[in-house]
Amino acid sequence: MTQRERFLDRLELSTPWMNAAGFLGYFPPTQRSWGAPMGAFVTNPVSLLPRKPAQLRQVVEYPGGFLLHTGLPSPGIASVLKQNAARWGKIAVPVWVHLLTQTPAELPEMIETLEGVENVRAVELGIPPGVPLKTILEFIHAASGEIATIACICVDEIQNEWISSIQDAGAAGLVLAAPRGMHKNSNRLTRGRLYGPAIFPYMLNAVCRLAQHDLPIIAGGGVYSQADGETLLEAGAAAVQLDAVLWRNWET
Image (cartoon, rainbow, N blue to C red; front, side, top):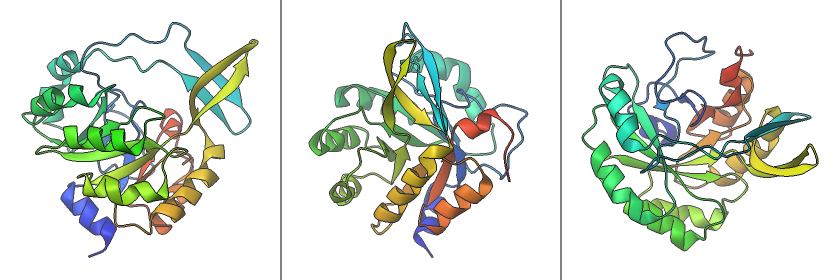
């Protein structure tokens, strides 16, 4: 059995395709045209307490993609579960809850709550930007429990020498999330996540660099065609997440 097959089997994924956090809400849409069947549903980011959106939300287009600044709003885990927990148990694919935290101390309460929710098979742990490896490991340890933990780190921040430590800490996989960047809009410099086909070569390079390790790697950005995703899988990715391509028709 290959690494990908072991990963898919452990996480009960029928296919290696899924959405990226932040692109399909807290419950999958009832009508959507997929280029390939989804193996899991990843929720929008969920925080312990409610978070308001950024006051100046922006989308800044550039050749090959766009920068998105939202502030990562969330109604809080209690509200998300009240509205969605029962429905999650009825969908055909496993649910991954993306957790948005600022400190490891917030995680045990959230994990304990999610362990009682049917069909939640993993938590995708959004690691804050710019934190050192020591803090990343503290986040992973704090999220340990009955549900698999998938670390989610920006592709431009992950380092080769971190992989073994992340796996030893208990992570079942690593999502290479979309990178952060900066662009000018209306004479204002704006920071945010970068999305679009221009990200693909960067993501492919990272997968080739990191797939040599035993930790399953999930490519989380830059895929704008089924051929792109299949290239990442051929390069060693255990799974592929789709982001902004889900907001338009799938390209083959």
